[in-house]
Image (tube, rainbow, N blue to C red; front, side):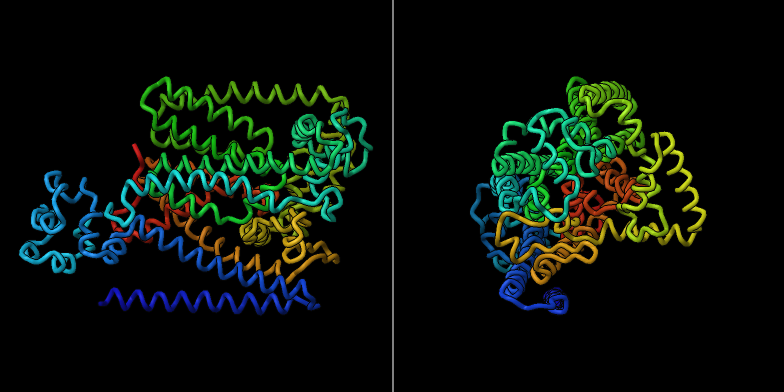
Length: 598
């Protein structure tokens, strides 16, 4: 009775929380809207529908978690005969009892582990009502039996793969005339003009050849983009579809690979929960419609983590070598497109070291070093084959790594992100070494100028610009969709004094995503703390994705901050959050770690 009253109070509190959020979101959306036309009313209506769907979706995730992992929920909601039939006979009922009828099973169950002696003489219905579910039924008891979990996992896995591949096509980007011509549009438009020819054909302007000379990290990506999509360059619409298809495929592979990672670490129940949580992360569909380094490295991070865990859990040396080879290879490839992709491999090295797995570390470390050196040399050779990216041109125009650090640590930089003034300052110096020296001195001067208080303030700005965007800033980077419903009711762009689009629907969509994001971030960091702050948990392979997210977070404090830079780690973040959600729902004092599958 007391638990029932507590549950009613909790439901009322959550109803108040969601109700208040609903009212506040609508209030802000209305306040932001300066002109009410049909599109604004439509955006408000559709935004409210999405908000309510999000609420029911989150409630559904919580209920699914209880059905998968909570003893109290699974038994209390059953009829007596159902409760007996659904008991996992491996842990509760002796094998000799498994073929009995429900009534006989009650009488025959080992009373040392299931039914108290005072219950043994009761009728089945009385016995079920009298059993203390908190201590009697093992945590494996659930409405969803193992057979059902197997079935639903297979269905949800392929459903997740198909959905995350198909939905990005509903969010295809309108090119080439988007008002926000960021990196993706520069690469897309430049390669469309080139049609597979040399980059030397491009005009040496800031948004064409000058872009690639300025940012050497995108030269290799630009070359591949130019060569691979050259057959589609004559037909702009066909190229958009081809690019979206590749990007959507990478998105689907990355999210699905993480499902396999969760299954390997914690079993199919946990992976089933991950599938249902991951499918609701909207940035997968916005970013999944454009092929840039964030989307390209999404599957590489997931696959590197997956193969590394496969290697850790392998008992045979040959399999360890094979999986470590693939993990290192994927990590090296990811590094060449986005350096942070290799963090997951570095986190793996730490896992092996703290657990004194020296033999495995001696296998993977040389493999990684050799592959890294070989891969980096291959990329340098490929770039050198492009006449426009000659050594002389790169020496004159390349921005040094120190540029991004100096830029993000400027006292005048209110976000810790991109700052055009500092970019122009760095470009004003004639050589790479001169730029590097100037940026280093600028950084040191900024640190002295800020002092301890200023440094703390700048860290706060960076954390805010990284972690407070529930859509990972996807609405900013994917403005102007081909889908007219999305464009009319949800697209909005705010660049300085320029405002375009529907702020009403845009804000309501952001509000809905914020509900998901708050839960994700809170649960994820709780789980990371649980894994890393207690030495006894360091043996848990979940240590690897946990330390990876911490490594990425530290890097973004030192480097240029941007919420978009979290994107390629989003599947790992969701996986960690689901682990902590299970801990909360299971309410077990001894459940320090989700058990791993052997």
